[in-house]
Length: 307
Image (cartoon, rainbow, N blue to C red; front, top):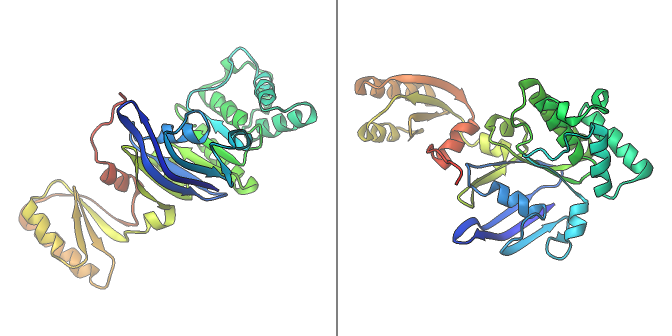
């Protein structure tokens, strides 16, 4: 559906995207994760035609981004993080205005407004001013506007920022339903790792302009089938002793014991070493990978403030 090859973008002396390669499957929901400044917004801005790339190639459903920008925009919808609506207009007036920008009119416009407002559950409030809406309702109106042109590809940039739990659940359910019923290809950017884990088919993690992990959620989260033992701290010597055990690996603050025929024996040995070292076990859980742990391991834990 979307093929990205050697995509490069810089701002003066800062590299925002460093020759990345990525394929986004048709009909999938791709979750895009990364710290502040990782390049997520730059990537989405290039794919939606807001920014020009410095180098590389992007094709969307066989269309080249450089040669066919208008054709690509015609099949693309965008729900930005910043609310894109007019607070003094009613929900209907907002949908009518943005619908005309998409070139819709007459029955086609009315049908698309009916679909979009129903998808976002805005029918009871369609004639109310958008400025009177709650934060969650404004986010839903933002989503409805992004659906007006019946896009084949929908980009969602932090669509649930600042909304309550009920609105977040409704929006996620709506996005999944649109993907399932209309086979819409969705690129979903969020800082809520739990949302990405919940909604995505594929996951891409960006950091410092490069892709550090990409694959199906199933493959990524099943790559480690182990017991995770979280400890307060261990010395390098203790870590080496643990890592010498078959099926045991150590990462910062976490010891992983692989599920195999030696699991029970390995747990006893690990517990013995930790006891002798005076280490405190904070938590134990047996599961596949937890995306948040994997994400923090790959991107490190330092704060990433916007610059």
